[in-house]
Amino acid sequence: MEGLLARCRVLSRLATHSPQLSRSFPQRCQHCAPGRGQRLVLSRMFQPQNLREDQVLSLEGKLGNLICKSQRLMLQVGLILPASPGCYHLLPYTVRAMEKLVRMIDQEMQAIGGQKINMPSLSPAELWQATSRWQVMYKELLRLRDRHGKEYCLGPTHEEAVTALVASQKNLSYKQLPFLLYQVTRKFRDEPRPRFGLLRGREFYMKDMYTFDSSPEAARQTYSLVCDAYCSLFNRLGLRFIKAQADVGSIGGTMSHEFQLPVDVGEDRLVTCPSCSFSANVETLDSLQTNCPACQGPLTKTKGIEVGHTFYLGTKYSSIFNAQFANTHGELSLAEMGCYGLGVTRILAAAIEVLSTEDCIRWPSLLAPFQVCLIPPKKGSKEAAATELMEHLHDHIVEGVPQLQGEVLLDDRTHLTIGNRLKDANRFGYPFVIIAGKRALEDPAHFEVWCQNTGEVVLLSKEGVMELLAQVQVV
Ligand SMILES: [Zn+2]
Image (cartoon, rainbow, N blue to C red; front, top):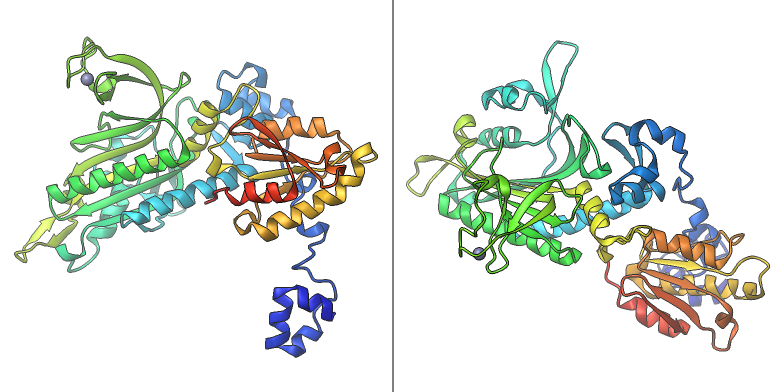
């Protein structure tokens, strides 16, 4: 026990502060020597890879016939499972990636003063009737009645709710503005033809932000601040995007932009100008227009997936719900609003769509569900003696590289060959796959490291592996 205490930070601290408690501590130190149970092992992950195609057929059709790559790959490796048309179970890898994306979105939104809230999905009809959108969006809204006959919809967006929320505040002053209120919640839209997996579903996650400013100038400044935050997010994800001038549609307002990932399966048609920075959704232009309105140069056509949308709303909603504040002269004035969406589940699928090969998923590095996959030798093989080395390497990584705790997965399906498991790892797109092959039996041991995002394969000693992984960024 004494030797154990000397080696372990947790136990030695316990011994100093609470000798009594430390005596009843288990002999085996869980902290320094995690047993098999503490390691993340692939065989215990819930990841239905052997999809029963007969159960998917009626909803998605034959997997081989799917034209949308992200939809096919996400079904094939068990990232999502269809539940009903346009609704999916999000399975553990997807939820991990989504939580990382949400953390990044939180960082970007909070860096510009965003405050996170959470509004109910159940949205009373009166709110929507006040803006006439109960009628305008009638078919898109998933509507329902409670036992008292009161009507609701499951919110596809929350301009009405958030404006009523701000309007309910007494004595707001210009000194408190701007408010940048946002949430990341499930949204619902009764799509006539849900398709392409998470790209166009009926139930999905969205980040929606609503801003309240004291003047049109201040609101325009906020608008460009949020657009810059969106650019920063997509740059950090390493995704090429187009910020295009867009139509205001049923949301309304006077200025709008879409953030689009250019890709063939995209349903939006865009024009971009190769000579200047002009880009627009074709909906905003005269159908006969072939030249850039900014520099008159010829326009290029492309398709895109809309992953973000920004609107400058003015007083369209604040005037209906009376969202007002006391201005510098002490008079009541209507708040100038903006609203800003990011399709959270759609960004995941769209990123997979643009980064993956036909057979292998590739993630933006920061979103990969697990950063490292370790592949020990096959049971009973010549290299089997290296199994323990791999377990040591695992424990060393999670101890020595704190940011990788919870990010290292051990593929313990040792009844399979290294080659078969490497093929799987390649399909899942772990940024780093580390193999204990025959060079692991050399002195000193060398591990084969596959760096999926650069395509490099390198042979590294334990120290080399540690040095490489210490550089890995996580969110
Ligand atoms: Zn131009």
